[in-house]
Length: 130
Image 1 (tube, rainbow, N blue to C red):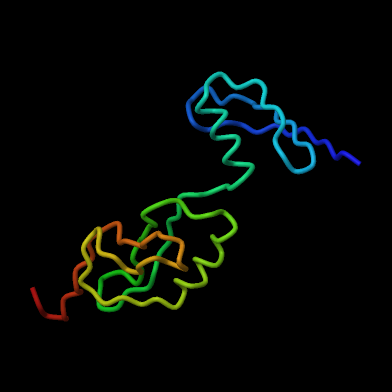
Image 2 (tube, rainbow, N blue to C red):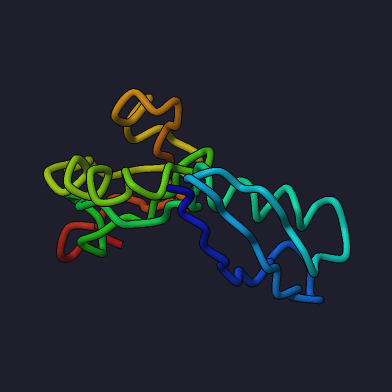
């Protein structure tokens, strides 16, 4: 028996925000309608077949003025791996000082993405130090 489904996906590639109508039969995309450009069609296909997301979070840092360091992945992460990445980084603690771009974790979960600092954090000054 053929299973047919129609989904509407909003394209986010450009400001137009096309509402793509996607027909899926037996788990395969068979038709994409109502997109105005090839980039939108590529986005919709990728979003349905292998969705990825930019990944930003924080890790703990010792010896800095603030207790957390903002970090990001160097490439998008598969959507179904986001929580695994968060769990993996939950136990990460780095030592100050850190410079923006410093690699905090290499090849996180074997996904090919490094986790890098997104800002400089200097060591906190001792009390009485100028």
